[in-house]
Image (cartoon, rainbow over all chains, first blue to last red; front, side):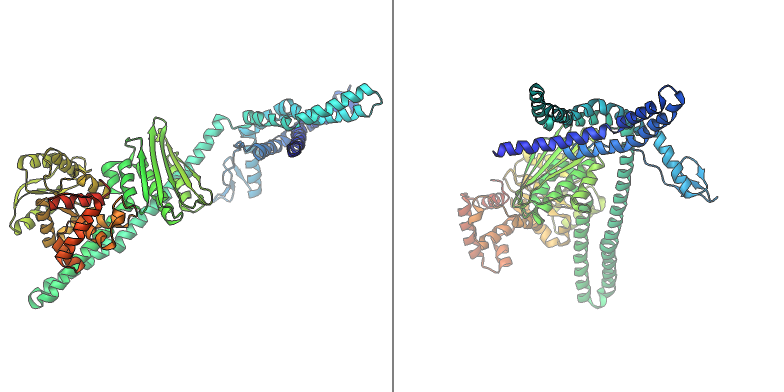
Length: 419
Length: 215
């Protein structure tokens, strides 16, 4: 019974979806049909009466192609979770020049409004995505549209046939109704492969996107590096440098007091020694934060082993690789593992963790698992989002599986091209 | 004692030599690179060597490698490793052969010259001298291997100080207990760890190894 219920629900949902797909993809052909009907009504013989329908077809197709594609993209993403990047070109900023004219990347205009309008039109005409959308509005009705229209058409035909007083026609009508219901859950699905094939950005558009993405990453990396250098400067300035000044002062005073007050001098020298030890400890911590010495001396695998020994957690390190990577990548991955282990201790309250490093010709894969309480996510501004950004510089990825209650499993990958 | 000093920075090497000679020991050789160190260790077989971890030609862990290689050829050759940073990983590698005569300290341990020379003499005698930081990290690490769980808190702290390389007398001073009381604790903890050995130095080294999770 329950199975039947769920099947009916699926058929219902499928039927509605098929109707929606058919309606959206048939929108442009409907405009064409309306134009033809108009032309015939005004007199098929007179060529001048076709002018208005022709204009209607052109304007209607051009104006509807982008909204239709947007809707199809939205529906596919909503129903199948397949995200098709749109790849529409964006206009650059419109700026006012010292002459008072507005520059929009193509030409000068007298007012800001004109400049924006002009830019919009030029971007639209020059955008390869526009022509791709037009092609799609021609292809979609003949493929996905026809298939999706099948169940509603069958239902309509069945209703008409059932109305006839002939028994044979009623039988055919009932059969048609069954076929329509049975095909409903599947008929709308052709829209996905068609959309993926004909709506995805062309290689040139993908390249343009990639350039934009890399520009953003470069900006990210530059900002992060500048912030890091400022942090180091501040730490050195407030820490080691200040301590060394104090050390020099103590020694100078001790030198002065050596003859007259040897006891005070000795105490001062003891202070100086303690100061030197303290500043060395500070420097050591600072260096660990910039570039851990083991990483330089032994490479990533041993550095992670050393790290595993230092965290208050039972960490098993498995390494199927001994490859030495570029120092920046080693450093990014090392600090990634360090951050994940710190999270395991601080947030997940884990008692055990496992780190696996594996490298082959396709790239480096690092997995970190803990038995903590889970619930980790890469929210904006958080540590994991930052880690993801730092890996993205090398086209690396970060996948987090951390259901509430644990366990947490994090997978970092850096592809070979960056190694 | 005949001592080798291997350190690539001239100022530090010179200072170390002067400090050691001020305490009446003899510096028989100095080295400034990894290969030089290995050569000197083989030729001179010093009573104890002070070796910096990071040295030319690659500025990685040449000093440590030279020391490990020399100890591979001459078991028990006493070495005291100095470094700007201490790593448990390196400590384990040094102690792994179980023959003792090993020290691993931060460079600033030379600030306290008396203690530094004391550590040097201890290592030369086949004992150990581990930086308290390594031991402290081990103590904070909550994964005691088999046997360690049975130790009482007092035995734990005795073992920790033993791992630093202190003698029973020194441990007694640190814990405000008599030397004979410490002797009782050590005997009981050797029993719990299952270490049956007549030679006290050997037993101590093996206890430390157990402590470092390396049976």
